[in-house]
Length: 509
Image (cartoon, rainbow, N blue to C red; front, top):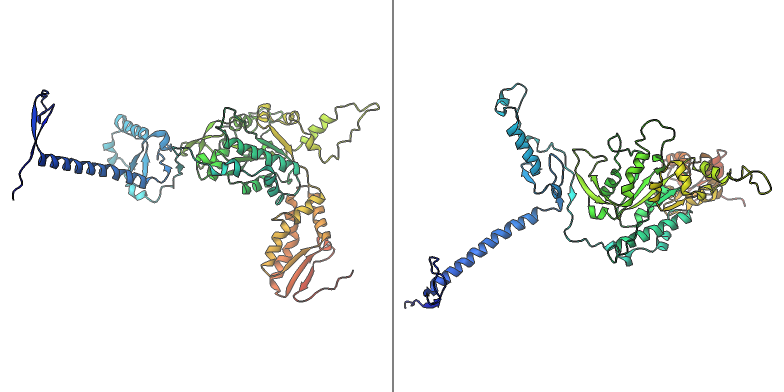
């Protein structure tokens, strides 16, 4: 049975040709045609929607979270805008592409004549597919604020917990560990509550002063293992003023960026330890330009205070071949350390300014053998040493480390988690040999270390010297079960006690 068409009468403002109609005009619509039109419009909409979502899915698939870098100027996509993609994974920014076209169009060289010129050859870019260096990548900044789970106030370890962990690895230096624990704790409280109210807490950068081998660098390395934040350890000996041979000042932030896997947001909440900070003191009586002293201190002011700096990615200096990214140092904690040689003489000179005559006179040699002389340091002493006042003002926490005495050296040998003696005992345990040190041997090692006057670094050098023959001879004989290092062996008047497996040496006693 043939289906009858149904027609609907309805008012309209426009006819099918688009002419304007009055309010009393009507048009006749065919319901079948209307359904066909609506169904075709629906199919067209679905098709357009599919076409729109397909590139988006492809875009999400191609996006690996890193910015594209211009092959010519090495600027990231966030600075230059949309990149132009060329074969062999080469991307060029619009500015460099436009300059290339301008040079080709406005240049005086006739490119068509290059083929006939001697010594000029054209090459295929596909031949260089595997020869181009691997480019540095910069992670894209997230559009929404990143959730820093490790910076939750409840998750930040308290100062006494940080110090307890430092006690497991570092012997002595109680005041230094306490000062560092409180400063780090307050810093991450400050970062976690930065936007809670209108009160802005300034960061507390630190300056550690201590003789060589007292544990300055080891304290920071231990702190890096305890905290789940990126930490970069660098030294100031290679830093120079911009434009001179050496590392630029911004390279200290570049190393932190590398430690954070080029993640800018994570690096902006890290810690930077600058060792040998005393090497950038002002040069005295110098007629030449001080490019590695006072100029470096002045250049570091903006880093310590907190500002946005252009940092080279994967390099120590800015140049045209290195991409740059912007890092805000507002929430980066700076810890500076140095031995500051001859600082004790400046302190001694200040303390001996009192009169040496009369009943209340002080003896000239009162501070000659004072082991804690560095603890009496003041900002004025550091200024006389060669540090500029502006630099010292940005390091409000100044503390000193004590020199190591004989008892502390003996404790360093055996008490920390990764003590030197425990390392050698583990090495010999792999050969199923037990290693022991008697009390006299430990004291003899500490006495020799104090003679070298290089702190804890001398301990390993001494033990390496005396353990060389033992480490060489033990693997020869499988019957050796235990080796005991004695004081006589350290002093060169005897040898170690070697016990065979299943044999006990009778001891006089």
